[in-house]
Amino acid sequence: MASGVKPRVKVPKKAAAGEAVTIKTLISHKMESGQRKDKEGNAIPRSIINRFTCEFNGTMVIDVTMEPAISTNPYMEFEATVPEAGDFKFTWYDDDGSVYDTSKSIKMA
Amino acid sequence: MEFSRRETLAMGLGAAVLTVLPFRVNAAAEDMIAEFTGGADLSDSGVELTAPEIAENGNTVPISVSAPGATAIMVLATGNPTPGVATFNFGPGAASQSASTRIRLAGTQDVVAVAKLADGSFAKASAAVKVTIGGCGG
Amino acid sequence: MNYKAMTAIAAALTLPMAAFAEPDDDTLVVNDEIQMVTKTAAPAHLSDVMDEVMSGWHFRSDETQALQMDDFENPAMVFVDQAMEAWDTADGSEGKSCASCHEDVETSMKGVRAVYPKWNEQAGEVRTLAMQINDCRENQMGAKKWKYTGGDMAAMEALISVQSRGMPVNVAIDGPVQATWEKGKEMYYTRTGQLELSCANCHEDSYGMMIRADHLSQGQINGFPTYRLKNAKLNTVHARFKGCVRDTRAETYKPGSDDFIALELYVASRGNGLSVEGPSVRN
Image 1 (cartoon, rainbow over the protein chains, first blue to last red):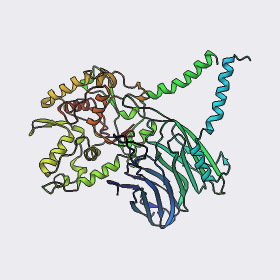
Image 2 (image 1 turned 60 degrees about the vertical axis):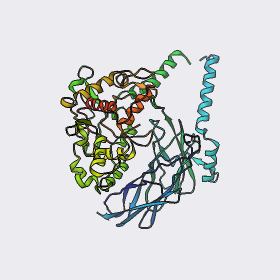
Image 3 (image 1 turned 180 degrees about the vertical axis):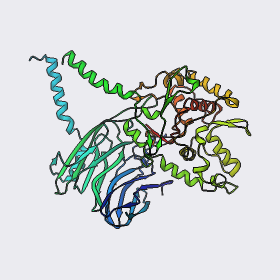
């Protein structure tokens, strides 16, 4: 696992049934593009988060394929429908095989 | 109205630039679009791409895409060493087919979004982003 | 194309750029609740050279400015989260964490960032926040010092800074710190390097102007540590000073050196009255 990888997620605590909520996520990651060279001139190998997904109670909200052109500390913002109380699950997939996940629950207002 | 030779030349160049610019997508980007669309025609409406006209730093450029009803939106940076940026696939839990992220641009270039719409057709939008060079440190 | 048309196009091209270089009049409110003072009357010691001091935030584009207006948009906050974990984690031979002595960071560190660098009577020296953090680590925790401009240090400075956001910078410049302050002032106005530039040449005489495609700010440090889009990490004051001195094509001072401590005190005092903004977002 790449060191110091930490996800942050912002989800409202409550929503009305069927309401659209805005979700913001950020994860600390270098997103080494594979384009850079070190001081000796050797290419630094690519090491990025290549996929991000968000599910709500098992239903897919968004599934993003990410390329090296996504900035360091990747940020994603999108909207989800909340039909009932439950849990959002967020998952990030690293090139090195690591998987980072976190979840947030939301109540009915 | 009369035009001098120089003026005519300038207008011709201007027209040439105008004609070429929207299609200044590099070969790799065109291949990716073709793969995404299966070679289908691209409509000009149905997808919106928001990006700053001038980015203070190419390392972190905020962009947003939106395509009501779309199942997927692919974003390309046509002037990057590799044009791929991201593909957003929207599931049934998405309240809107829109997303925002922050991207890297290697220099001034066109950013392109191609959306697969609900009816299976495709739409394209592009935005020119000028990337400025920093102060003394670069 | 005739001359008139050329002029019209040139004017159309130039005008927005000229306006763009000027500091703007936007208002900085973070999380819809913290009102920041980003422009205010210059402190008394500057009244001969400028009327108003302003945060570097005003010199940035709307997109960059927006990143600092919401803690979720601000990428620096991920490092603040990391520092929060470090705050509660014991390190070193004494088995202590920051929290062992200082307990709740929100209470104990409120107002701290606003008055640093400041005089430490016991040690008989001017201390920056980084020096104080390392003093705690070495002498209270029995832990290894952090690198002066390293990621751990920058994150901890950011966590401490957050507790003072919106409070006015208020560093003392007289009494026991006066000699250090005078030294810092002299450095600020001394030209260095092959380009023979002083801090003042850019940040006092020329702020608001373009330096290549960038906008020169007043070089205020009320927003440090700052997340720069350029390197996508938190940057400390001394690392920024080093970059500036290097760009004058001079041998730079070392981060944590007496020289940079003096310069930090002086530059901080030029922002007395501006809100603590750290961690800010800059390009």
